[in-house]
Length: 542
Image 1 (cartoon, rainbow, N blue to C red):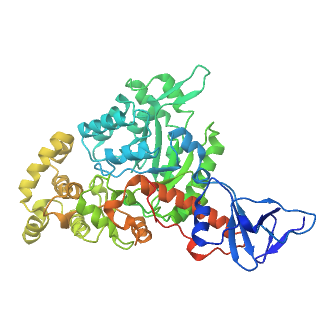
Image 2 (image 1 turned 180 degrees about the horizontal axis):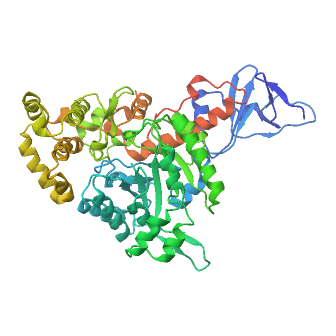
Image 3 (image 1 turned 180 degrees about the vertical axis):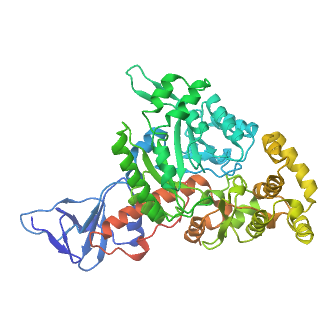
């Protein structure tokens, strides 16, 4: 049949719909668009305008039926399963191409991991910054609640505390934690290589079994490349020599990439290089194709993206750029399951896109590494940057002018620096005694550890809700949180006490699927009513 001209575009669809099956009421049309189990047929009625039907018939070629109207646009019955890589869902045993990224110091708490896991959504426990006994307790609790997953644990690179990194890996191997999210790595370390290689074996058919899965969160191509390639032979040989892995595992480790998935981390909260998502993701995807062509892996690496994904629109844009999955972070911190205090969650729910800035990181302070934090309602960024300025200007605590030192003791530390040093020694004697050994006879190193006392505790004050320290709270967040808050405005999600992580995840994924359907229809030339063009959180989804 000849295509019919509708809405200034040619309609190739060979279907028609009768008046009885067409709905013109906007609220009904919205429900039809949200019903992903059925297709949508859009009709341009000459008198009533745009209407939607969920059933159509093959248009007759034997004359016209005055009661039948040609289909102007069509969207198939596709929902969240059409977004991202199905292999991500299969390998990790999840419902959506989505995971909630780690937030250190247990902000990505056991409650958050378990709530999402029970809904079939992957979440990374925020193990960074926690002592081994605390991490082990979390492993036991999460594994008891989610014996079959899904869950994962964060393994953060700790250049100043390698013993912690090694201890975490040993815990993960001991307790058979089968997925880790590797973050803040500047390159490969023996610890992450050990974790990966220790889980390699062959099945009865000779196929390589990768028991220990790695999702590497990176923001630089040079780091991404290392995680896309097999583990270096030199590093593997040392692990064989010290008995950590077997010769067979060394052989297998040179046949598989260091990670199963690469998360391109754009402008996120916490550790970030503030990379624009629209430049970072395509670059990492291109690198993946280059590496795959070189190594011809049986299972290609998947590339997802996080950092800036805080609304359904952002989620869909990320998927449309080729992301295998999306990652959220900041938006989860205001949820009731997060390990953040009531004061912090309330503050986060009112954060706008411009209310974030960069401040020195506690774990990489001496290297000048910064992380993204909230600046509204707290003086932490200003005080932390002042500490780094003093660190770069002076070679020891004693060299700091008396007036400046007095100001630090009264306003920032609220104690003498000698007392702070005593507390620092006690802290690292439990956590990593070598830190104190390296500071002996090194006044610059001692000053760094004292300043890190404030940087480290400020995030814990935020989590525990330390009374009297509200203006020192260190709160990690990216601009995506501000976008989420704007999107949630005037809805039930505007109230932080009504935010739960499963509900947020479903809104982002179903919202992205809805917008995908709307965009498909509008690209065919139909003009849907304005109120149908956006996904708003009008009701709970979990």
